[in-house]
Amino acid sequence: MKARYQHFRNYHQEQRLTKFRLLAAFLFVLVLSGVLIARLFFLQVVEHELYQTKADENRVMLVTEPPPRGLIYDRNGVVLADNRAIHSLTVIPERVKSFDELKLTLQNIIEISDAEWESFHNRLKEYRRPYQSITLKSQLTDEEWAKISVDLYKLDGVRVEDQLTRFYPHGEAFVHAIGYVGRITKKDLEKVDQQAYQGALFIGKTGVEGFYEDELFGSPGLSKVEVNARGRIMSELGRQNPTPGKDLHLHLDARLQQYAYDLLGDYVGSVVALDPSTGGVLALVSKPGFDPNWFVRGISSKNYSLLRNSPKLPLFNRALRGGYPPASTIKPFMALSGLEYGFASWSERYFAGGYYQINPGGRRYRDWKREGHGLIDLERSIIESVDTYYYQLAHKMGITPIHNFLSRFGFGQTTLLDLHGGSVGLLPSNEWKKAKYNEPWYTGDSLNIGIGQGYMVATPVQVAAATSALAGRGRYYQPRMVDTIGDESVNFEGAGEEKKIQLKDSRNWEKMVVAMKKVITDSKGTARRLQGTQYDIAGKTGTGQVFSLQEDEEYDADALAKKLHDHALFIGFAPAEKPKITVFAIFENGGKSSKPADLSKKLFDAYLYDDYPEKYNYLKGKAE
Image (cartoon, rainbow, N blue to C red):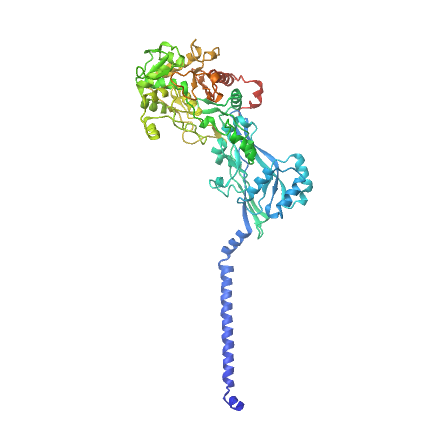
């Protein structure tokens, strides 16, 4: 059987088959080697630049360096927002094995509050670059810095870094004008270039800081760094230095601002002073304020609760958002509207009793003077602030002419050009009431508007701007905070643009100014206590009701809670002939209008004659 099998075996054929298989295997390997060589040639020669770039992207990283923030100055060169170098304790999370152990170790060296640890852990959850440090405790004292430096070699991942931080040297009196910066949040990053703000500690939140964020921030620097596979920086390959933000020079007068804030005393209120020749805001006060430095590095829960829960609402910017009845300060504008539309004249005389009735036997709309004023004319209605005169005038006019005329002065509109968040107040109309309450406009509604009460509310900035238009005899500029950005004047729509309100009879401007001067100089003027200045003041007092009295109800301040007392208001400008300053002041629940009138006179004296108390000399500065 074996011999038989061997007889049929073909050795020659087997050798040929083996050679064929070896050749096929060789060709297969050769082809694969060719493909591999071709692929290597394609990757390393043809696509060399592409993959070199990709490799560099994994190896090289661009790191932004936030620029120094621009400074903010008042009109005389006083620094209102500064940058200060501080020592901060920072942590690189990737290098920390146990945060619990780190906390125990650090607490044996320096004091770190629970709020600081909480803030640190909150920031740990936010997006950041690998191996980017997070601030644990800012503004180390010299003693804390020394203690940490001694043991720093034991603390893996812990560093002491020099940082620039925002500092507000003048505190709460300026916060509602200047605003403040705060820690950047995820919501903030959605509105800005995230690459530019990478590594930045804070961003403008409110006031000038918020509105001019782009100009104050500047341009970030760029560093090209080499990193390892874990993203840790190994070396710096190149660098472009940051461009500092631009400095802002405001119209604001630091001494006037602080003086006005202090003159409000313990009262809640607001003061707005304008330069009618430019629209520049000389003072923008809302009291109470708060320390803006609390917000720079992240306010503690305790301090924020104090501000949020305070019944005086220190976080609320009354100058921009406070809605108040303009009360009798509206009467000069009401009188001009009556003259403009032919419902009033300077010569017409009116018997002003102690009340006004729409219909005989109807509701009595009472004058502030219970016995009345007797026979008066339009000028006398301004001097003595006669309510019944404006009841009858509003009755004759109706709401539409009143609305149309007052809107020309900026009521019901945003007036301040370069601060966010301003309220438009409320200048009511027939259409507004129909949409709001589904009710028609009643004659009684017009009567209330005639004396600046009822549905109408205005902000301090609005009233101050309208008064500037009156001081300028119809020529005025919209209010703005900033004068120059760097070396250049502010240039955006409306800035520095003269506006003009035309009257059919331009002589009415001067006649109204004369009437407002007599509010101070006349023996029956409601602000006659301001007599005796070296210059003429034109002004108008006002008393804003907080609640409505019943028809026969008497107002008794002594029997009322303080929060129900009337608001006290005053508008004025000086010198009356060529005004250099316009002031609106309101004391919430201040009662008598003498308080804001006295405040305004002191501001006029201070600004016009440099007559400030000596304690404000530190804010005098030197005009640049």
